[in-house]
Length: 295
Length: 308
Image (cartoon, rainbow over all chains, first blue to last red):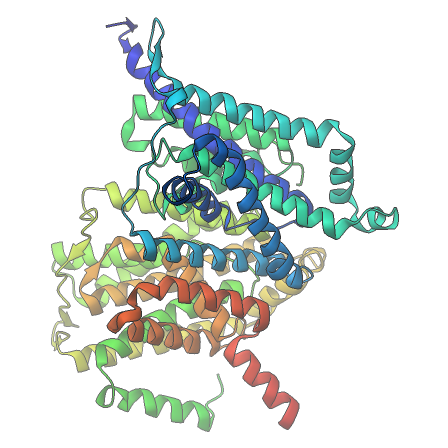
């Protein structure tokens, strides 16, 4: 048994890995929330339900359509993103000029309906989804055993997160998006179709959650309440990081996953609560959040 | 509150209601009505959407339940203790959450509530998933037997009227005027020299304590304290009650609570029991899209248009 200063390294790295996996999902979900918030100034309460929808999408696609994991990884986010576009166009846009709290409540209602619907159809016990053949097995590292699928989650979500960050911060499309965040009226005057941009952005943010859902299907149990459980944690992470930056959302998500993993190893009783406690500390010291801009 | 004929009729109806309806259902409505009124004090009169108000309902319930089971406290003292516990928790949570506004406030309160959810799940004295069961109702002031549903009903009614009166009094006091000023134009309230966060905090504590009062009372009625009362679903339900009844109106939350409890009661008996959350979600969506003033708000509009 590899130990260092009395610490069981196998256990520690094992929990760190679990933390990194959770952190990858936190990062994907809070990234989606941050993108939507940037342009629409609303928090999508249905983001968790859509993540759940993504996982069920992968499950159902395999069961009924014979669509495997790799195809689902592309198809499901597209379908989910399309649903998001419809949701923005027909539910959120009509109340875009009202207090933003109403759109929060609206998306909460959508989340309740989706979760209720899937609980009704599939029960609340989880379903399982097999790891794709290409990613079965694992690699034995000197200090731990690394299952291939888990390595894939971390790599794939990092690629998607960094890619999204690059697209928004470094490309012309991203520049439009950031300008639309700053001053939508001026953008409209320059001939940019801002409402279309808003709709597509919402669709993209939602598709990220769908993507996370497909990724999550083989590692977590596919169940109707998987989304609401993770979403509340992601909300705490969003408060910790602040909605100021895309990069901040990614870093905070991964970081909090690691913090959670370390807590699971050193003081397991607090592993469920540690992120909320970090949020309390951040609120006391830096109320705007670590990357937040507003006072 | 001015004592109008309308109010006297309502009070008369409340007094005879247990002879027409099942008292436990009426008590459930009253507890949730008080909970929703407490919540509405924040949402309707300060403009703060707390998405974690269930934590105060549940904390009051657990504290009262634990004390009633393990000490010989009389019910009124047990309820008082639960209310104070929720008020204290509200003082801490309020201090943390009023630093953030709008959507952030909603997320902070939700996350803080989830923190307590896990505490109640893991703590040794809460019974975990089972909760506290078989809590004795006890004897009010040591001699009125509350295991009698009719006695219990009038006790609950008295508590509700006290809470309702207190909220009404708060809303119509100079303090309440400042709260409304903050709701309508916060920078202006600040520039007039009011320390906005202190006022928000005070309203938060009152709201939390009254939510605790509702939870403590509910625990005695059902002789049960469980995780359901701390769950975020419950936080969502109280938002729905307030929205449906009419936020920012005095009677709205009462009407909303009665309608929501009525719907749940109706559905849970029949084949539609599985659809409760779907139907609640749909009501949410319809309310937000087409019906933002709520039942009482719409009635007030009609009255104003035709008789005003």
